[in-house]
Image (tube, chains in turn cyan, purple):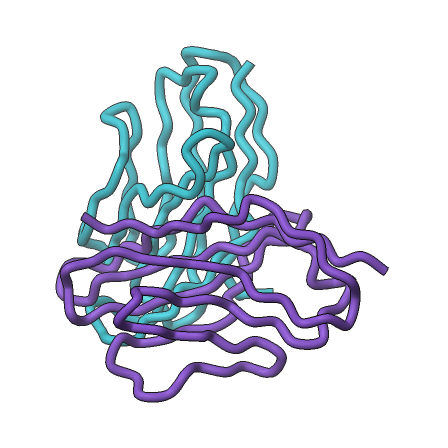
Length: 115
Length: 115
């Protein structure tokens, strides 16, 4: 158990819908990262927040957005869902940002299926 | 641009044998970190080992060691005395320390340990 929690574990929805994935980082971790793992694209970095502020952005679609709240939990919002958004979405957390060794601990993931 | 290459999509190894999983990387940043993660069939991402670009010695963690050849831009994972529980997907990953905190992952190698 990495200490990172993600809910829900599984999510099945229809095209055009909107969903919210939730992540609670390890106690004391200030950075939260979101990754998408799909069969064709592999593991892709989406976005990072550090202490409530966006710090880095990767291959995140405009239909997707995220935020980190004062209690440091984070939410990833996916809207106007398409079949291709079906994937495993990971949240990871780390103590800090920008340090030389910054191990990221991954949550168990949320499996999103868009029908 | 960052790039991680894992040329072995799948490997079959007899139990108790050592196994080497290949990883090459490409970066122009002199400061970087290399990671290996394990993803069993249950889906979670498990951190295995880390090597910094300035580390003088190869990293080791129990049965895992990283064969770091900087000039060749190679960071192979060596698993000694393989066990059935080592059957999983293995990802090599890199973070450029002078850029941001995102980790770039390779496509992965699926390792099958045979009894």
